Amino acid sequence: MNSPDLPPPTLRLQLDSDALADNWRALNELSGSARAGAAVKANAYGLGVDKVVPILRKAGATDFFVAHWSEVPAVLRHTAPESVAVLHGPIRSDDAQFARAAGVRPVINSLHQARLWIESGGGPCDLMVDTGINRLGLPLGAISDPLVAQLEVNALLSHLASADEDVAQNDRQLAAFEEAARHIPAKMRSLSNSAGIALGKNFAFDLTRPGIALYGGVPRPELASVIRQVAHPQAAVLQVRDLTVGDSVGYNATFTASEPMRVATVSLGYADGFLRCWSGRGSLRFRGAELPLIGRVSMDMVVVDCRTAPNICEGDWLDVPYSLPEASAITGLSQYELLTTLGRRYLRE
Ligand SMILES: *Cc1c(COP(=O)(O)O)cnc(C)c1O
Image (cartoon, rainbow, N blue to C red; front, side):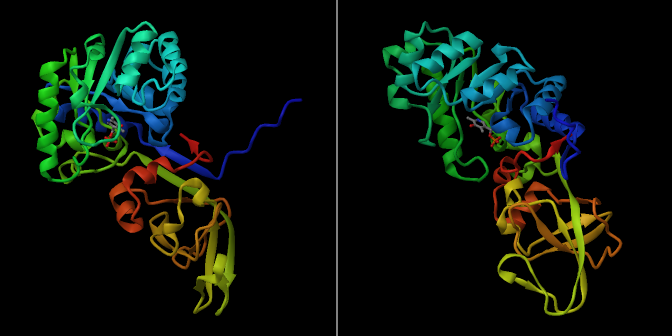
C-alpha cells in the first residue's frame, strides 16, 4: 500500500550554510599552518550529517571525526573512507572487521584496542594518547609498549580537558603531547578542539578538530567575533486562546493570568530538545515581537504570551532564539547540549 505524502512538519531547523562554511574557513585560518578537520559525531551535533558534511567538504574540510561505528555509514554517503576517523575505536573484534571493510580509520585508545587492530591485520590508524583528561586515550606510561611500535599511525591525537578556560592544565597537556610526539612516529599531530584553536598557534600542530564552533558555539571569547550562528529553529503555532484573570497555564499551573491576555500554544517541547529549564524563561519571536514563554515546557508544546502580537494565527512560524552563548546563559545548559538534544522532529533545511 502506498502511504500518502506527509504534510510538512510544524518544526523546522534552518541551517545557515554560509555561516557553517564561513565558520569552518575562519577556524581553518585560525589554525595557521595546520588544517582544520571537523567533528561530525552525534549527527553533526544534531544538525544533520547529510546537510553538514557536504557543506564542510565544499568549504575545504577533508578530515571528519565521528564517535561511534554506527555513525560511519551516514558520513560515507558524502566523503571517502580515508577521510573518516572513529574516535571510540575498536572495542570488539567486530569493530575492527567493520573498520577494515569500510576503509575508515579507527582511533586506537588503549593497548587493548592496539592488540585488536593488529590482530585483525593492522593498517593505518590514528592514535589517541591521554595527556590528562583521563577519559579515553593511551596512558603516557604505555607509549613504549611494543604493541604501539607496531601501529601504523596516521595522526597522533590528544584531547584538551579545559581549553575553554585559562588554566595551567592547557600548557601541561601541550608539553605532555609534545613529549609523546617525540616518541611516536606519526604522519600528523592533532591536539586542539574548537577552544584549543583559540589558545594559539602552538596548540595547532598539523590538524585541528573543531566541533562546536563550526555549528555556532563560542567556547572562548576570542571566537565571538568570528563565529556566526548556524542553527535557527522555528516552530508553528497550534492554537491561539484568550485567558481571563485567574486562568492558569500548563502542567502544575505554574503561570496564572493577572489580566485578560491572548496566548499561543506552539509545537515545541522537551522531546524536541527544548528542555524544561526553558520554563518561564526567555521568549520566542514573531516578526520582531517578543513572546515570553509562560508555564511549563511540556513534551510537545510550549505556551507563549502573545499580547505583543495579537494577530498571530494557527500555522504562523515563530523563531526560537538560539544564539548558543545567549541560550546557554538563559538555561544553564551547555552550548553542546543545546544542539545535540534537538531531536528528530525538525525538518532540517
Ligand atoms: C568532540 C571532540 C572534538 C570537538 O570538540 P569541540 O569542543 O566540539 O570543538 C575534538 N576532538 C575529540 C577527541 C572530540 O571528542
